[in-house]
Amino acid sequence: EYFLKRQTKQVKRFGMADDGELDDDELDFLSRRGGRAYKSGRGRDDDDARRAARRALAHVWSKTERMNCERALLSFGFGRWSRIKEAAQGGTKLRSEEEISQFGLAFLCLCTGVPVASVGFVSGVDDGASGAADDDLEPADERPSAASAAEREGIAAAREVLREMGVAVPSLTRAQEEELEPLVSAGGAEYAERVHKLGASLLQRLLALKRLSDAIERHPSPFDTFEAPPAPGGVGRHPAVSWTPRDDALLLLGVYKHGFRAYEEVRDDPELPFSCLAGYAPLPPPLPQPSASGDGAGPTPQHADFD
Image 1 (cartoon, rainbow, N blue to C red):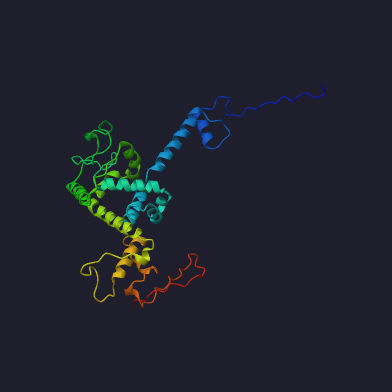
Image 2: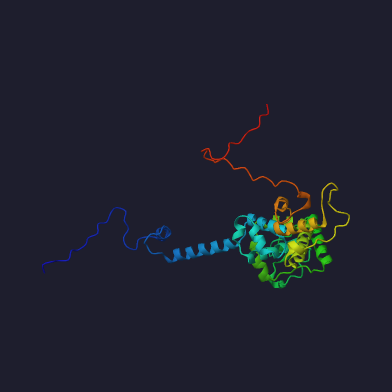
């Protein structure tokens, strides 16, 4: 034969490992770095475990997400999940409406002293005839139960609010508890304590907003036909301020549209022509802000001379 196949020869460098000499730590490192080395069984299991942990943590709400959702819930009321999601700040906007409605249920339970799994349990307080079987519940001595007198009084007052409305104390099944617990578990003990103490006032706000939304949503064109209930004695009206029953209706429509305590948004809404604002010039647009780079765009802010 005229041509002979050239025989390859591998030169082993100092420190090189022979075939099969790579240990599991090196294989795992290469797999994480995107190397071409194959993944060991343990490496694949570790990756699966990390992915599962990330999925589990994604379901757990942070304290910030929870407070943003609570704030929006107390602004728009129970049942208006799409509006609550729109008004929420930060990562809460990325949550689904179903998750937000689940938080609403968990929040209602904590207001009335119904524990959400291990969060919010108070010994000596009826858990609202929970649907969970007794065998599924943790023993009483294993569930955190320390509660102050203020917490117990708050829970009792919140349940009295429900009784006056003819509404039963909510109850949760074991499956519901497991589903709702990640929404309130971050700092759960401190959060439950605060909600227990304020439960009655929080419930009264939610019930008032629910009544308002139900009354407004009965009207096909609420801005044209909605009328506010009479306010005996002109509650909250100053005699020097022009105010009519129509303004009462506009105020309630503004609360429905912009949320509770959104005073400036209600005042500046052109769809809400309050009689007390008639004849006043509209607010000027905000002044342009100077650029951060200092390139001269925008006016230079003037500083007052206090000398």
